[in-house]
Length: 132
Image (tube, rainbow, N blue to C red; front, top):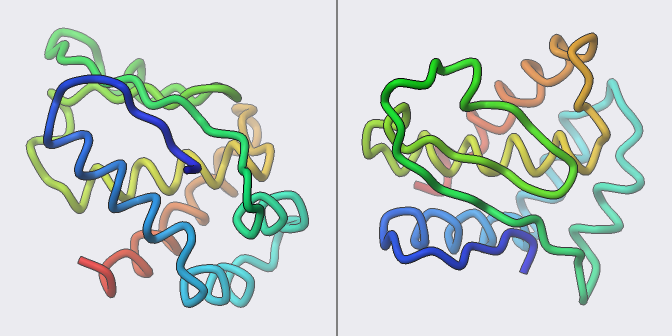
């Protein structure tokens, strides 16, 4: 399991399960290799193909008073989701999980790498449409 969620929100749990199924899909892995050519993919691909991947913790909360910028901070060990900004869209949540997971594995966590994070996000959003 690449993403790990231990909360009790069914919506988030189903999205995490869907994201995990996409991550292990050979089609998804091949498409990522083809489309992301602007960064080194070695670590990401090793992790995706690993039999025992290091899980990234998913933490879900509901806080409509936090700004969107604050709710989308990415850390190297967890993905924080503010469900009040997702608006019950499974597509949006799966895209966010996959984008954040990919950016963590690619090491795109610094603010000066925002352009690359945005490019990764656009690629992943297009790929997820074929799964949902």
